[in-house]
Length: 343
Ligand code: KG4
Ligand code: ZN
Figure: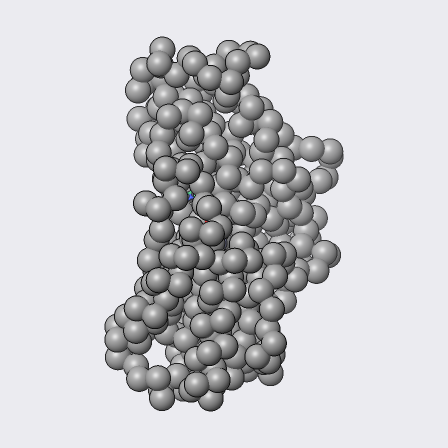
């Protein structure tokens, strides 16, 4: 048995997990910094990195304790080293290097996006590969062809805002708290998605790229009126807000589902996987499930706990990378962008 300690600090979650053989999650500890960033309406890199420094020692110990695992039982240290906020990534990378040196264990550098693409397969004896992967998070909205662990080709990506970013920005426009994704989903449950026909930006024919900045602007105009950037919200009842939230959510879901099906048509693959923070959205999960069912496509969504940022996905993918000899040195760098190849 191979036990991997995974560390994730690419954004505003300090996360550590212990996973055996890339399959059995023994602990998965996530310390969210949401409260620290809320008053700024988004993640402040310096605050994130300071909080990672303050929390990481305790979170490593918690993850080991919950797994009933001693440092000597750990075989491999895996850490997110890209993509993300470099000041935040550096904290996890430095901690992982220190543990690797002190405990004399091999170090693996994991691409956060490849880990999101791996997350639907955690715990599965038969991973659904090759697959079209729709990865929707606060920083990324991409379609990939996934051939296996960390074997990922980019098919299309957002040209502007990520889907999660659009959820967060629209929530701010609607006066809902940060982070906006779960708040919009909550509000949308009480609304009618047919109230406003927001644009579904598909870009040019056959394109697997996305654009969500237009819909965000459309929501702003709908609430505040053309030419204004504020005011208008006070005239809205909670029922109005719920209707706008539901209409916005439906428009985003429609685009994501259509593009995922276009990727299936273009690649001829019959597996579709879904991951990333926005994959926690119930409306998106149900719509993907339904369209795949009617087309006889095998659909696997990441379990809810592995949608938003976590270290279980880092440790699980780290196991496979270690197995094929993808070991990093103590010169491992923190990098802002992903290593994904374009198909
Ligand atoms: O994967 P993640 O935790 O971090 C990044 O790698 O970016 O994704 C965070 C994003 C945020 O934008 C958040 O608003 C969104 O995922 N999110 C949701 C939901 N839960 C989280 N969006 C829509 N519906 C949700 N239930
Ligand atoms: Zn993420």
